[in-house]
Length: 440
Image 1: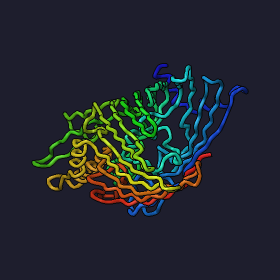
Image 2: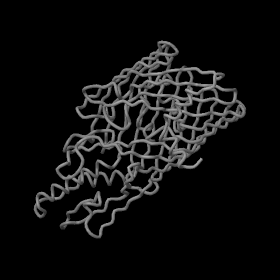
Image 3: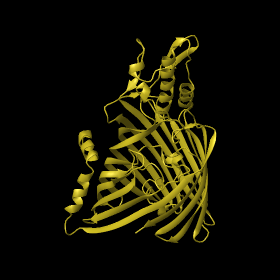
Image 4: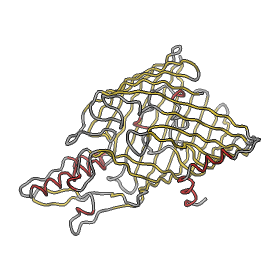
């Protein structure tokens, strides 16, 4: 299948729904559903994770889905999953999307081939990331589960299994494309200087990805290792600026150039049409005995052709939980950190200012505004979260959850919508959340 064909398939997910209308009468069809009604509130006036502030919100954790499984034979089946959740392309809105839609062929018990839209096997909970009743945490740690901007891809995939004594091994491989949006938040209203207004900007992207993930499972122990490659491009036809040249305007004074319009003569802006990434993931979950389990996951995202203007970062978490009757209290610690060179660039640009005189007041104001604009366009992270919570199992299909989490923002975090004219750094953000999770 060519990339052009894959692009058409990804751009028209509704076409997969048409297959459900024309299913053969002999197909065995079943439906399942899931949902989370979750409310969370922080102790800050500014927005965190897009939706959280002192006002509280249902948007961060709530979602609903319906899945159809159609089995034509022991070897051939079709799966489609629709989901209603907060939009990934605008604030304060929900979208209905097709999360899964694939044709599955199992030529034998150990091999599964799929064609269509599938979940990418990045994390331990990749396949069930939207089904809150299947895991204990109120929210899977964003420090790790945000390493990839999208968890679905449309293309081809395989899953090959082996039995190794008392253990099972599974190798998953995939190649496909996905359309997504990357969110930036502009702290200041820059319309007076020809820039964007204060608020969120969503950059439409297309991601061509491929990868392998090896999963080993023995009784209550699971280990997963993955290596993935991705190429990101802008669907609006634009390019990515990969470096920000510094131009001197007076002794000891200058500015970073963030767009071609403000580029002085002779200064070339390095750009790339595609950003190339390598992502390495590793995780394990083990039963420690006495109804206690430990989960650890790590991911490293490396941008190979935009080392400072890109998204070089690494994230990890450790989660410990213990089942006590219907209760499962847990503790998790998570960390997300951008590469030093990316953090250094952010701090240099964000803190850079010119003065008037020697520059004219209007010129100095325009340059200073442009520096904060460049800083806002850099996706930079320096944060860690400690979470304490519990889940209460009402039934095998219903679960209540409550959590208190404190996130420490160090130098900066792209998950924070900073106040106009200000910064959020070296600050704690407390979040309390409650949710009801169910399947049917």
